[in-house]
Image (cartoon, rainbow, N blue to C red; front, side, top):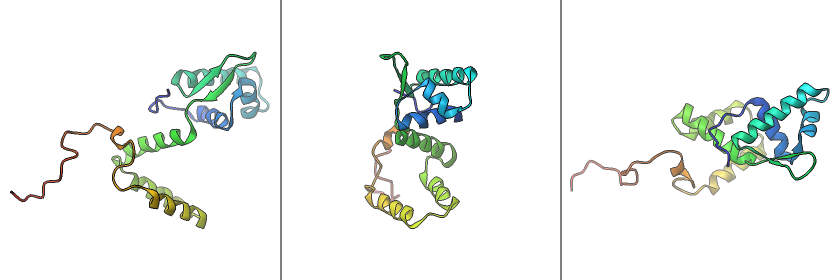
Length: 151
């Protein structure tokens, strides 16, 4: 399983994007990423795939003559993990400033706004699934807040 905390370079991300579209060989990835490339670019793609495999982001199928590579983590899981990390680093774990900035960064068309509204309406009240996995919780985190009144 991939470790979402492991960094992925921009070039490794380009390879993952190709693998999210379907499995591929080193040659097919090289032809896509470096259309006029030669042996040096082939070796670069091979090394990048080795790194992605070590990090747990891709799997190698050795059953055929040419090894095929498959993405182990799907795009949505990868994106969600990266956004959660960014939120933790820049926004003290809150998604509101991050989402606000993304929405304000460019104009959204009517379809995109409708999709965001639909997603917000579908959210359950309370913590999202897996919220406790974001960080450790203290023993009093689920306790009722103290309203300051003595009983």
